[in-house]
Length: 245
Image (cartoon, rainbow, N blue to C red; front, side):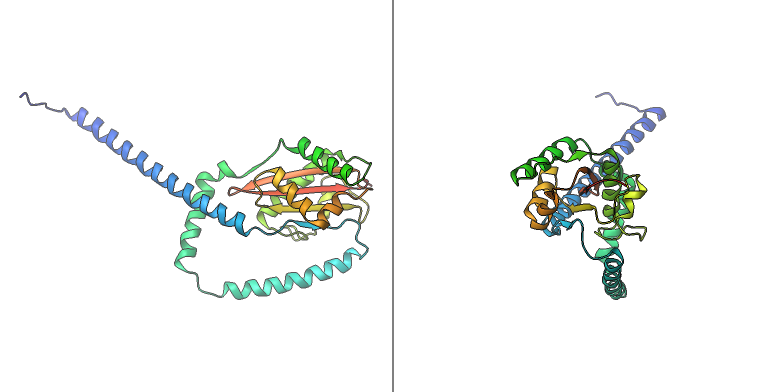
């Protein structure tokens, strides 16, 4: 049998190919592991997701009174969070942090994004609901409200809070910020998270009696929708107003 001799160049090529195959196998293994962990986290999020949060439009109590009540609740939440922060971090927390950093840097671009293309269908569902409830006036889609709703959806993906924005301001300040200032109290907001489609999100709002009543308020004229996906979880927002200033 003839002996095959490898030149130095061939040895180098074989070594490079072997290293490439090994690196590819490692990357595939990491991706599969990440995918499994993300799916498990998503299932837990959906199982434990909070009910949709809805604000009644045209509340009679003043905004200053509402701010005082919200600040009081926020103070209690801060105190509770401070107590939790004093507990020593476990190994599992460190592991989750590592996965989170890896997810954000490597795979974040695949998950974190604005979701669009559902707005027309959702507008039809909203007006159909109003018609079924005997409301004759139809809601009109507004680009400024949609800009505000998309911005608000991204904000609640960072801090899921109905009344406060990540910058510490109250949620209703986003109207004027996006060029759609309203008269005091002449607006309605709906937020939720975890639903995989606009149909699921709308069904959650409709199932919430308070949300359904707000959606069917006869004086509402304009509406905007927003959805932001972060870490494979979708955050939904509806903003509607009676009229602009």
